[in-house]
Length: 299
Image (cartoon, rainbow, N blue to C red; front, top):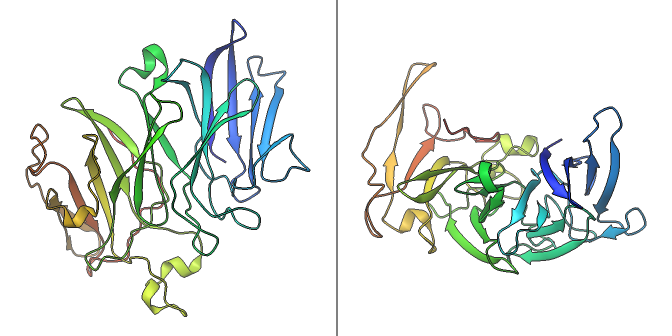
């Protein structure tokens, strides 16, 4: 279960609100007022089934993501941001969506489509991270970032209503196969720019332990996985490996337990076209197969 919890101002009083999803246990989210931890109160729930929830949407899948509780940059309203999650089909379109939900009532204020995903290949947009330069002082997220099973890194700009959507980068291996993203992006600020750290790989079932090309039928996703740092300058990179703007770090194996990472210089202050972001291929002695299936930590 992934939780979002914050102290917020609702109806002119400060409250502590918790929002959570159900992971593989269901297709929905719920909110609790835990201001008095000995007497929690249910606020609302939203889910894919209109027979179960007063607020429903069939494009809500299995809710593995982290709810982001924040003020909306466009107007300062307290909202919670959640995603369409995994396997949002039957019912559902399979597309990736960001939902902007009224924190007080559970009403869906905006449903923002990435335009990617269908019933045969669901998007899997599940885990997101909110970015603010001064989150501790004004609790307002300007951008939200997330990745999907097709290796796309998305940015949602909350300064406009509805939020503007940018496909920031497409993450693929050297042969062009998409590197699935199933973890929450970690965010930092370097030289005035948001930096998005994201690892690739999936472990949604035992088949994901094998090379997708060896399955029957073969699957189109990459076996080689990577860790990326993406400098958000406001424009799309397209296929990251084809852009030519990336510093590549490598991991070398020395026996079964020792790994050495290269230290190639990254020009964080440079303009477009210079060697700014970086990528590290993740693997063992063969350089393949190691997936990033848990969140990264920036320190």
